[in-house]
Amino acid sequence: MSLIHFQILSAAMFSIGLYGVLARRNALLVLLSIEIMLNAVNINLVAFSSYAESAQEVGQIIAIFIITVAAAEVGLAMAIILRLFRDRSSVDLDDIDLMKW
Amino acid sequence: MSLAGIVFYILAVISISMVGVLVLITTNYDLSLAETVFYILAAISLVGALGVVATRNVIYASFLLLTSLMGVASIYLLLLAEFLALVQILIYGGAVIIVILFFIMLTRVHEVKSITDNSQKPFAFITSLLVFGLLLAGILNSNIEVGERSSVPFTELGTSLFTQWAVPFEVASLVLLIALIGAIVIARPKEDE
Image (cartoon, rainbow over all chains, first blue to last red; front, top):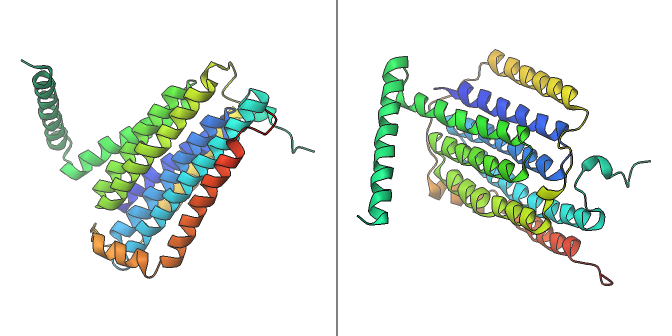
């Protein structure tokens, strides 16, 4: 088992998340796909930090920051989707064209 | 026999049979134990992720996401990053999935009949496949000199986080605070409602 295994796993998860973000219309499902992409990035960071020979803790610390930002993003996105659902009773991203010109 | 006893025996049988399956795969396919565990965990993570992008039910999607994220936490354990595995389980299992499930419960978003996939589906499929091919080509063509897997002591992680990374750490706490206040302000009903 080498670094390449983890890198390929990370690339596969990232692509799956990207497909979800591009192909979904439901705002909640897009959010879940973004979580998958963030986790794929984290796998890559932790794998490199684990196999590195010096400054090992840096990869893990950046992964912790990514998890923090992901948690903040989920809270904020949930509030925005909740607001949209109350105002328009829809979470369909194709219906939200308020800022389209 | 009490219920707890029955549950204990079932769990014991399942664990022993799982160890048997592990040993069987390891000996049959000439893999090391760590590799077998890695392939099983990778399969769990990828199947969970595929389920999230394939299912039409948001509740199934959130539980599949939980499966996938717990698989990722186990991958962290395999990479000897125990602290991150703990953080992953606490934050994703304990906070993010709970928030999403509460959201589904409060909004009844699953009762809204809507098409979950948009018309860009084939383009999205091709794009993600291309990105995967690009990443794979980059990974296979790079030759990075790496050592062996090794763990970082908790003390070293903590020392680095509170000395070298102290300012980003404080900024991260501010980001969380602002996000929470913003979430409350956005989700609160307006005065005249």
